[in-house]
Image 1 (tube, helix red, strand yellow):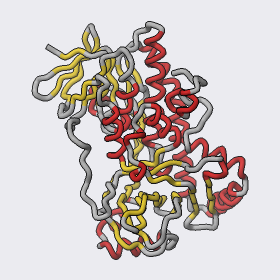
Image 2 (cartoon, helix red, strand yellow):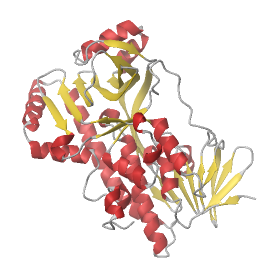
Image 3 (cartoon, helix red, strand yellow):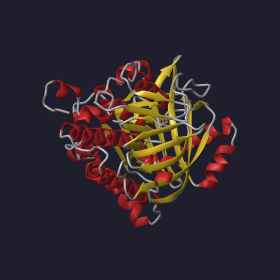
Length: 420
């Protein structure tokens, strides 16, 4: 006999767990399913710095979502690394742009936080909500029936629900079982990821340098034992990435110092490096009757803008808003017309961001002298346009005018300006 739910979220990462939390206070019977155990702390990788290599740059909109759901409060302030400035420059030219939170009347542009800390905070916020946490269960098949969808699990267990949401990542098993068509292509780059200790403090700044081989980002982390730390994401051609991965720590530090122009002094220590092939994916459709894709299961993007998890959390906010409104109107939440409201609202926004990042990445890889002149002149011009810069950074912070209620500042919700 299959266990029956109204909504099953497959994938308990940051995005999937947040959707389960967003729907926890509804009238629905909700289950959160994951292949890894959910009855123990999210595991960390042992590193010399003490930082997990997997971090995200959370926008203000993402912070609002997590705050409104009661999850942000589970992340200790010492585990949040706020950044107040951003510096972007062309490593082959003179163009440079600087952004400052103070110019927007904000005290930060965002936070750099280890992924596991965010995931654990959301899982902690689920305690006592009634959401069924079904960890250590792997999906083997997806079968459509008269009453909805049936998930077959390893070991013979089965679950049923009229609505199932895939939040199981870029290589989504559920998406493949459901037969969603994808557009995907290689960026022909690999990302080298690690944590470094630097001689100089990062000045609460997110640094990004565009090099001929790809962008290099240094993301500020809180000091530990008077050491200055940054997470790095270095996008490289596959051959260059292999060479960088093969270097010993001292040689790697030297290469990184030169690439970064020594802006933070010497690299004093580096954790183990990880190399990740970069591939863009986008589902041609986000929904089918009784099925929806969110987060990386629906779209994965180049990491240069740090927008991956932020787009996923906005998916959550939009889908939760659509489902909540449908419940209040007595509509069938698994019906295609209801789910297409979510698809229409999020697909255009995600495609717009992906296209912008694709164009940006191609512009900085262009070697033609006129394009190099154009991008450097353009950066210098934009750096002097305060109003335009404010618009750019507000969009990066997720502070657009058409955000779903869950992504709005909590004080607006509390004052009744926005009703979810």
